Length: 169
Image (tube, rainbow, N blue to C red; front, side):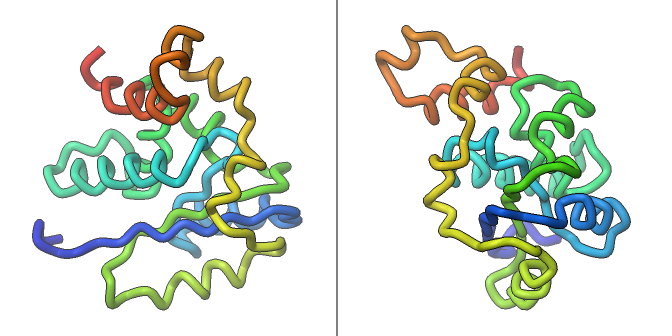
């Protein structure tokens, strides 16, 4: 993949999902190519953009820690370097009733979005409504956000900082 290729991250949010197990199985089996994210652990779309950008960069320089671009997106959402923990907390589980789909593609190659979204048995809602699904207390606990941090910045700021420095600490 050339470095000058323009990539786009498309996010689709669904609630009242009835087939999360089927979607997860299809993603693991390679039938659909996207990141299936647990939206209760996401504060806002920017958080996923950061994870996707980092995954693309690591793929281009050959330094991914996981086997695929989309598993790297999920791994990059996690504040620790534990891959299994990342999938448990940030990946979709079989019983989830909400799913956030992240798809990385070129500007010209957007035909997969509709095909993947058509497989979801649920109601699509604007990704800007993530706040209605986010489990803020759980996010604060997982990212170890302190009241002092929240006093001087947003929760999103604290989360993105944790994601950015996990490779350094």
